[in-house]
Image (cartoon, rainbow, N blue to C red; front, side):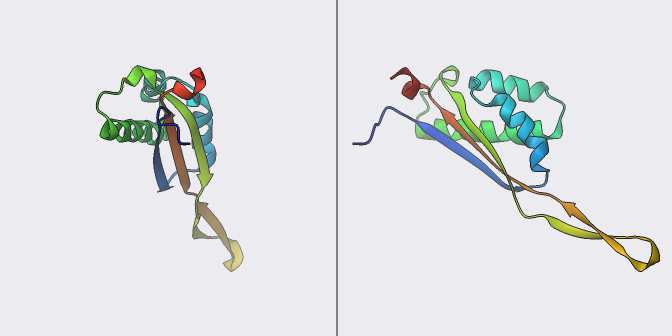
Length: 122
């Protein structure tokens, strides 16, 4: 039997041009935070990964609003924030004696899940 009271809303960013390790620190910071508090923390954080996560949280909240506009923002919390590595762009840099070094420009797949918190009350 499907539980209709539990609501999770997800937003995903794929191939974001930032290293996963830089975003993971912020993802661990906002995980299990209330949505309002997480948005405030990310808006005030100066690190570049904060803008990626902030936009994803807003997108997940918009997905919730699309389902039902009557949802209260204060009732939602960040259920999970997952950052996986995407494919690396490989560039070459010339070195001495005709050699070359590979420069890896890393990408990230970021997934954020919001929950309304009703499943924790049970």
